[in-house]
Amino acid sequence: MEKKIFTSYRLGQITLKNRIVMAPMTRSRAINNVPNSLIAEYYGQRASAGLVITEGTSPSPNALGYARIPGIFNADQVNGWKLVTKAVHDKGGHIFVQLMHTGRVGHELNLPKGGKVLAPSPLANTGQMWTDQEGLKEYPVPHSMTLDEVKATKEEYVQAAKNAIEAGFDGIELHGANGYLLQQFLSPISNVRTDIYGGSIENRARFVLEVAKEVSDVIGRDKTAIRLSPFGVANEMPQYDEIESAYSYLAQKLNEIGIVYIHLVDHSAMGAPAVPSTIKKIVREKFKNTLILSGGYNAERAEADIQSGAADLIAIGRPFINNPDLIDRFKKNQATSEVLDMTTFYTPGEKGYTDYSVYA
Image (cartoon, rainbow, N blue to C red; front, side):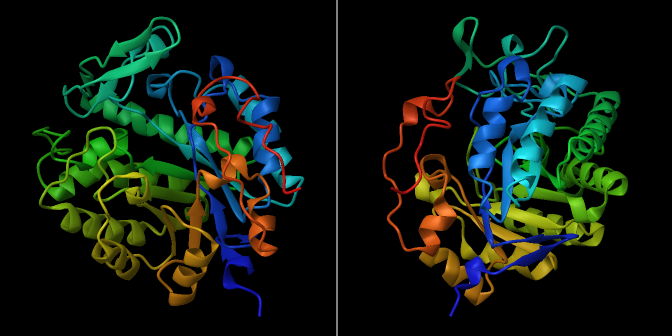
């Protein structure tokens, strides 16, 4: 009998050819923040996934916190992404772009002239951020967003989503995880505002929910999704007492908006604290559309969680880097490559990017 992970799945208005998702992974190959033919080749090589989610992509000049991450806010970027969506669609795949506003996780040297490192509150991360110009630099104290800047940032998300559809994407995933801007609003540690975007759970969730609604109103609920990391600690997101209540409320309200999926992140396989099964069950109960789970999955564990109903789709990240034919290997019970050069995760060029081979 065919494994359930290899069966088709209806996601909004598209039909995925299997239930394995290529998770978003920053790869820093977008020179001048513009997608290019090398990036198109990379995603095209991995188009056998049921759904491909791109690396975090900036909806705004203010959101380009890291060196060489792509944007989708100008014409050159849209044209660059058209190469990528064509490469995936030509191989029968589907692709969502992940819209990632880095918020306080950035540095002015990584932004274009006039760009600002923005955040809900003027609280800096500790540690350092890589810049191509001057190497490692201390994180700056971010500019606390005014209400006008909150409104303008929402408008940037909406325009980026419209640009994504123009570029040929099947939909967009809002990056509400890993300590970036949307999660910065959600957490009472990074958000100490006293206006309508701070304080209570409802107020802290307001920005996320407004972005989700305004984007889905323009491009459609069937094309709008979000990634969340409850209990995640990436980029200095300490845990707090209200996490389950906050994400329960968020899941309920996202369900009311009707977005197409929630993608829950669990980085415990990489050494982060374990995400309690209770929050996964709460989100599953509150949110009636598609649920994607990710975090250290192999084919067997993916099949088990699909069979049990814990998730509808399973996202896999790093194994797709060095196994561009990962789906084929899973189907044929072939060994996956363990050769993975971590020194080339974020370096420019094809080395460690498009030069991994398929099963011999």
